[in-house]
Each structure stands twice: as C-alpha cells, then as structure tokens.
Length: 248
Image 1 (cartoon, one colour):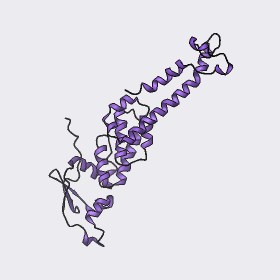
Image 2: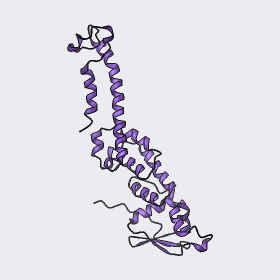
Image 3: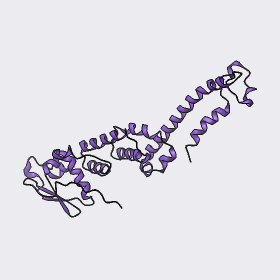
Image 4: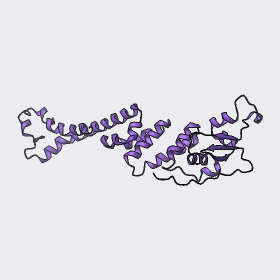
C-alpha cells in the first residue's frame, strides 16, 4: 500500500495565542477556537453555546479529541480554514475526498465550494470513467448540486458497460444510476433519429436507379410515392441495435 505524502503542518506546535489542541491519532494540533468557530457552525456550537451572551460562557476545554479521524486529513482540512494558509494550500485529487468529508461534517461551505470548483476545473482535462464517476459521487454525497449536471454531461458519453465496472457507479444512489442510464438512452435515441434522417439521402446518392433504399426485399413493397422515404426494417435495426448493445 502506498504511503500518503507528508503534509506540511503548521499546527504541530502551540503559538502564544492558540487556545485549543485537537487530538487526532494521539497527536495534538494546536489551533484557535475563534478561527474554527467563525468557519464552522459546528465548532461555534461547541465553543460558544447559544445560551451564552459573551465569551465567559465559551467552552473552557483546552483539548478536543477527534476519534476516528486521520491526522493528515485533519491537517489538510485545517489548512483550508486558516486565511493565512488557504490561498496556497491547494485542493488536489489526493486530498479532495477527505477534505470534502470533513468540510461537510463541520458544515464549512466555503471549503466545499472550493472543492466543487476544483472538480469543475478538472472536467476540462482528460479523465477516466472512474474519475468522472468519483466526482459525481462526491457531489451527490455531500449535496453539492451546482456542477452535477455538468459532470453528467461528461459521463453519458461513456459506454454503459464501462460505467458499470466502476465502484463509484454502484456507490451512487439508485436515482442517480437510473438518471445516468436514462440520459444515455435519450442520447442514443437522439443519435438514432439523426442517423435515420440521413439514411434515405445516402441510399439515394449511391443507388443507380435513385431508389432511396437498396435492400432488395423492400423494393417490391415500395410502389407508392409516399413509400419512397420510408426506411427499411434492416436500416432501422442496424441503428437500434447500438442501443441494445449498451447493456450486458
């Protein structure tokens, strides 16, 4: 298993005004309650209860254990909360999932916005099917709907079999899975209609007797003028078969 890259950590030592230590995996991260509270309504409720009208009522605890959290993930999250660090601390594919999870848990909307913007910018790059589905799963899981439709546009161009091979497809809610399949089928229907509209013209262009369909078993039934623009059942099936081949 690959080790995570080491995270630059300005919270490992206390400074003159730090007033809280987050305890993660037995190690302390020295932070400032006011910064956490102004960034997160969850932290605000912990440190400054609504019943308190001034700072005298704030939580006097000097340590706050965060059981079940990963130390580096919390450091990456804290870097996004501090104005002096969040400009240079980038969201990347390596920390996106964990930062989004913590930002959602502690209701830090501006960090979630930053993660969502990273996803949107990443869509302009060459992405694997798995990566596209991961981005959709993250947005759906953390209720970030702003770019959801943009991501789906990139996904529905993919082969359905490839989509179903990704674990992120199966992590999506059933409603999202069905939405993707429905949009994929609608795209195929649009393609079928578009291709079908050109088939008579193509046949006419290449047919010596200018009949719109060269299929011999259909000629005998096309005796009326209004029948000349109909597509033969073979042409229709050749287009429609693409839709059925999408499913295993």
